[in-house]
Image (cartoon, helix red, strand yellow):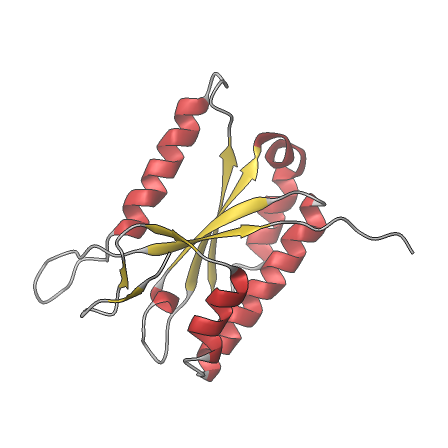
Length: 167
């Protein structure tokens, strides 16, 4: 899906937009070429590598937001919500908390959501979590001058864990 910036430097279309990791890096690190963006992206890569070492060969997706997703030359941070399959989430929950704690001083705001199948008795909790993040990521913070909030888009990155090759 194609996307661009609106007059307020927010992503349009105003929805969750699938994006490949290499496109994300190209658009927000390489093309904008600011040291702060590279610093934030480096922290993101460390996080993803650490997460992959914890969860093993599991595919997952992330919703990405934050001031990193605009044209600011000095973004504050990158917000990352990682959705993990139920079995994985339950198996490594404590390790996820440790990882989040270890990276809390970084330039990332990290959150985890347990993705439940539609036939799960607590599927409504997963739906509630998704709606919470969808609403939060779909609107800007309130503008101090006007008091308005603006619609904005955000990205969905799907990360597929490649099986290790035998030597």
